[in-house]
Length: 352
Picture: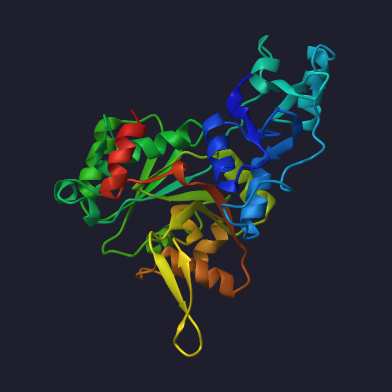
């Protein structure tokens, strides 16, 4: 039994996100804290739903999980029974319990179809745009010599780590927006000769975080990824893309669920300017924009031609005309902003 697949009903949303990311599965088994009695199952979709409703990360998952899960009793099922349910219901996980309903094991795709009959891997053949034109001042002095996207993380530059996270899913068409030290970046890929396609979007002058996307208007016939060149995100990109399509979003942004604790007592005042009360080390929950998006191709028409324009402008303009902008939450440990020195050092450790 993989213990990381179990989670206590007393756990918080934050800990559930971290447990799910660590387990590498889309579903967890919810149990009573003291005796592992099966209470239900918690999916990644369940967590997203409550986060997007505004629930605090410190809230308990009690009431968020499915209290009537499909499960097997030990030695009272066959492998064919399990295969049929997995194939018919598209489950990610089925708990196995003993006669007292205590969880003793779990079935996942890998151990149900281990006889060679495997789950068909999902593939994404969609374009990926990488915004690689910035100066990367936060990473000076490296970026005095190199474009930000070529700053090395262990034996590879940042941009190769980013591209790899897409190529393993089947993405082969990459578009790189370049400006600062763009010729160095072009020379790198010419020397690399990768087995995927790389096209360059030249900014004659800086156009912000979205201005150069206008050059791609009319090039795509399906939704596509846009990512900054200094972030590394370890998330389920297929679930992200499916979320975008299912929710019928025009733009989906990936947001990191972060909890901030102010290490001081904050003072609340009354209407007379006198102290009302003190909040001791208050906690605040935020969804932080990571810099990874999915855009529908028609959205690019909103971008003005050859003008400085940020992705935040695009999101605001899209919302103003009634377009739907969705948010896909991920665990804070699944996002590395390599453009910060402190995070750069974390990336070196985590990507060994």
